[in-house]
Image (cartoon, rainbow, N blue to C red; front, side, top):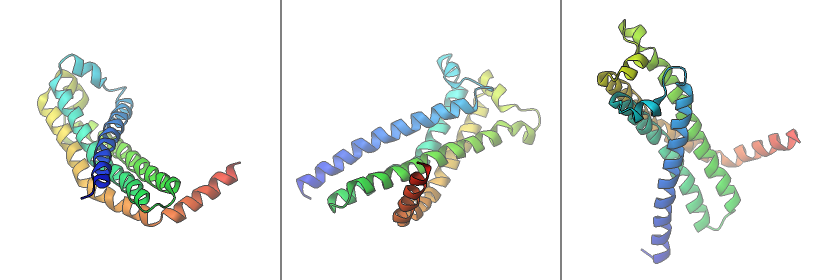
Length: 185
């Protein structure tokens, strides 16, 4: 392995960690907006509510699994195109498109999952998930966090497939978006 390849690999690791942290924090913030009427997660966590902490861990794990293929696609697009000396701007656009797609899907999936999980009391009778979380019901926290984490794990593979589809159609997607943008002006 050559020295430049090693340096590029280390830079990719650092960028991947930064991108993962930023996208997960953004997604957690958006998920917080979804539950504003029901619960203030960080307020509950500051009070030491373990159940909410477990639930939020599930959110973070789920989002991490869903956006990771987008981050990998972003870094692959940049790394490969930089090494092949092709148009860096197109590589950057393609990578950003894949990363944003992964982020949007992660947020939409969390919204749908929270809507379903938040109404779990309709499935099981008298349990109101949000109320139970605020009371510190660890069992509900584990249940909700696990459901969200499993959704993320299961969707990671699907996300990779979606991003592969996008990657194989990047030139057409970029041309279409340029046409749309030029028509807006």
